[in-house]
Each structure stands twice: as C-alpha cells, then as structure tokens.
Amino acid sequence: MRYELPLLAVRDVEVSKRFYEELFDQQVTLDLGRNVTLSGGFALQQDFDWLVGIPKSTILHQSNNMELYFEVDDFDAFLDRLTSHPDVDLVHPAKKYEWQQRVVRLYDPDWHMIEVGESMAVIARRYLDEGHSVEQTAEIIQHPVEFVENCRKGLE
Image (tube, rainbow, N blue to C red; front, side, top):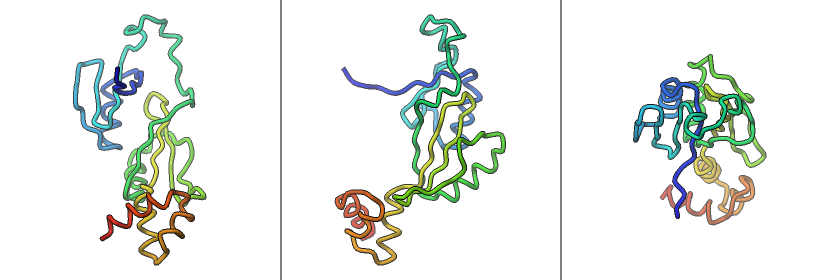
C-alpha cells in the first residue's frame, strides 16, 4: 500500500482550479472533469457527497481543522499577488513567528485553510549572509544545525 494524495471537496472545480493556478502556481496534472489533480500533490473533487454516497448537508465548510501548507522564496511578492485578489478571505494577516518565519493564512473558495510561509531555507541563508554562524542561525530560526548547514552549502 502507498499513500497517494489529499483530496479537497469543492463546490465548483473550475473556480477552485483557477484559484490554485492564479495564486499558487499550481498546474493541472490530471483533469477528469469533477476531479482534478494539481502539481502540488493534491486533488480537487466536485460533488464529493455524490462520490462517497453521503448527504450533501454533511459536507462541512470552514472546519478549521487542517490546512494546506506552501512555502515561497519571495514572501513579499506573494503578499503583492495576494492583494490583487481582494475577494480572498484571510484567516489572519501576515505575521512573524519566533523562529523568524513570516506567514499568512487564508481561505480558498470552499473555506479550506491555506498557510503560506516564507521558505525556512531563505531565512537561514539571510542570517548566514548577515554574518551569523551556522550554530547562531540554527538557534535563531529554531532548526537543526544540519538543516542550516545544508542551506549554507547551497550558498557556495
């Protein structure tokens, strides 16, 4: 047995497909009409209630109990892209965590939560470029020294 991918129940697969293509650069890898697989390794399913044989009324919207997680190298560019979609509802505006990662959370058209975070590798390289040692950077960003070492090797 092997795990394949998560599937999101959506009301309108075309609306959701456009949303993920425009904001998250997702490409359709398989389009079966009501079921679409995206390049990020997840699928969208319209008429999920029909597919699994459950009442439509049992499909919950905005359950806030899971999220899709994306990382971007240029967080500011993503925020600029996000402002060009004023119809997108935010869970919260951009904020910075103690491990120095900036994130924003938002809802897709069907109220699935999405987190977009600044790449931790980019953050590590920023601190290394500022002259912090590997050990200092690991402490600041609360990641293992091995992770920071790998990021440093990417700079060479």
